[in-house]
Image (cartoon, rainbow, N blue to C red; front, top):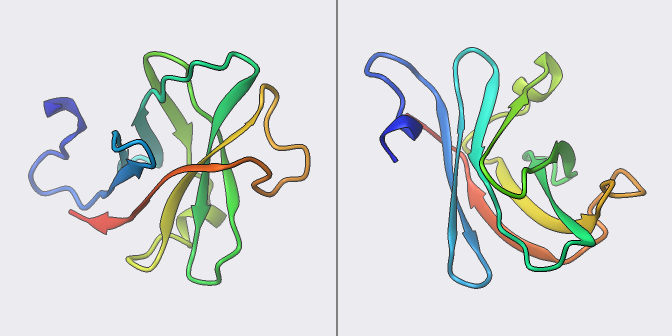
Length: 118
């Protein structure tokens, strides 16, 4: 989608999150600190897609629940921004409707992708 591409001169992070079913979700961390991602459609209404940042240390950190339809916009804190690197991954798991009860991924992984600077 054209609106997912960074304007020239900006240095944003992007990831193509490849789903286990072959689908792709595009994600972009803009220079204004907002992560924009497409919806992850789910058939099961009892679960939600939760987005995680997995930095180089391998410990997943929640970025929040994703919209069932439409686009999600998530504010990236300064602490999370410091963890963005080419070695970091974005991960999507299926979690209970209110999100992971433990603060760590508990449901199955449904997609992942590496961050790249553009």
